[in-house]
Length: 85
Image (cartoon, rainbow, N blue to C red; front, side, top):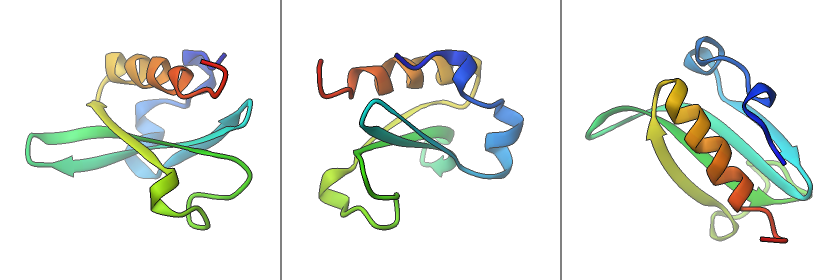
């Protein structure tokens, strides 16, 4: 299970996307501008390929507030993407 401490700070994500993987699921978190302002965009997809090499139909996206609470929500969302759930 992914935990909050596994994700780098908002200061890091402000500058570049953060990506990783856990138990068969790859993910990416990045700062994104949307109609409602700045959000934390989360994307999850099955291994083995990178974000760029995975087709869009295999990716799942969600948006969260760009703050500490948003990171915690994104971690919960990513944990729900695990194939065993």
